[in-house]
Amino acid sequence: MTKHFINLDDLSSNDLQQIIDQAITLKKQHKAGEISNALQNKTLAMIFDKSSTRTRVSFEAGMTQLGGHALFLSNKDIQLGRGEPLTDSAIVISSMVDCVMLRVSSHEDINTFANNSSVPVINALSDESHPCQLLADMMTYQEHNGSIKGKTVAWIGDGNNMCHTYMQAAKAFGFTLNIATPE
Image (cartoon, rainbow, N blue to C red; front, side, top):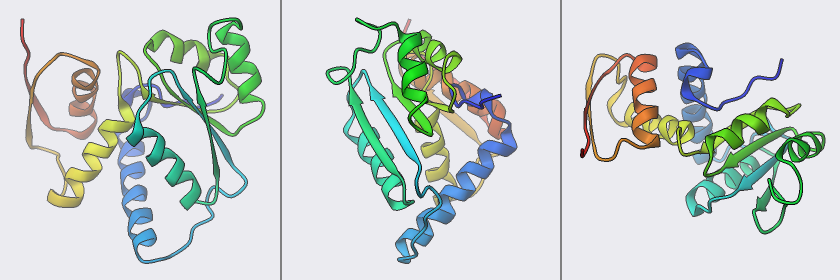
């Protein structure tokens, strides 16, 4: 069965921590000038319904730095959900690449794509969840302050996709989350 990363709770706490630890190691190796070909001959399809400079550049740069290739597909480039059913797009695109990343408005679209994909699907943003951003936040915290386990985190702002993802993170990483949102 194909393993997807749609929500933070799709992976165990241990798996999430291993991803962060590996990312920190790869970052240090890259800064030291060490070359990694961990993703050599691998292609990531990046599907953007919602544009983002940082998401595009970080995923493309990461693939390149690890010897792989990233394919940028905007809603202007493909018929995602219009003209061609999303299920068909998932079947066809996943037959040609090794992994698919989606940054879309609708969480339902990511689930539909994942349910019809033969390769792993990564949620780079949806209206319900933002797991990659959360991992970046946890990585940054760990690099500067060590483990977040046992700490208290305050969320002040909209009860949006990041707030929902932080709620999952509190359980996964063992921190207390206090939330204040407007009515």
